[in-house]
Image (cartoon, helix red, strand yellow):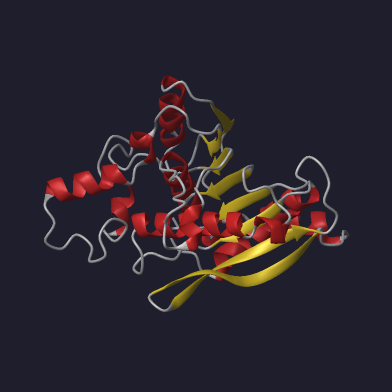
Length: 277
């Protein structure tokens, strides 16, 4: 599920050439510490548009940076090379590239907790960044798409009485968009478990050791967004290639169907013949 080795060289060249003659549309602030975990700072980069304009003026988007559930800087750099931040900032959006930590250090649920803290951090500093805390979007790709959907289906309210100031803010967002996300680890082309849950570390810090089949199945279901769908969620946009050899296309189909059956809004854009990258 590692992203970079599967990137087509032509795609990278196209993106770089497309923007080579234009000045950068954003100011990038690197390595903003949004929380400390076990004495280590978790980071985000902020991409602020130099010339805020509609439709994104005054609006913030949290971009979950994760590939194969790793969030090293080279994953963020891949997003940059794809032009994601250029595209959004040219339309006036401020993008908060949240890095939620990596596999082996954090399980999916711990990464979710980190993402929630990142969302709350942005809301707490919304005035500083010039964005509306009540009108934020959430995006992610591949593993980042999975974590994005996990956050969107398990949004937490704010607690005005919480001792931690960030917990005063909810993790509610207004719109969600993802590319090629895993959504159901219990049905991965008809088998269990998707990507073998990355050797168990996606659900347990110590992997599969001493875990029963029931333990594994319950934990795999817990981090599968399709089982977390409920009424009242924000609208979703999914993009997926129907020839994806890494994350099966039906993962997006199932999620969209579940949202629609729950009375929500979800749209799937199909990239004909598209593989994972």
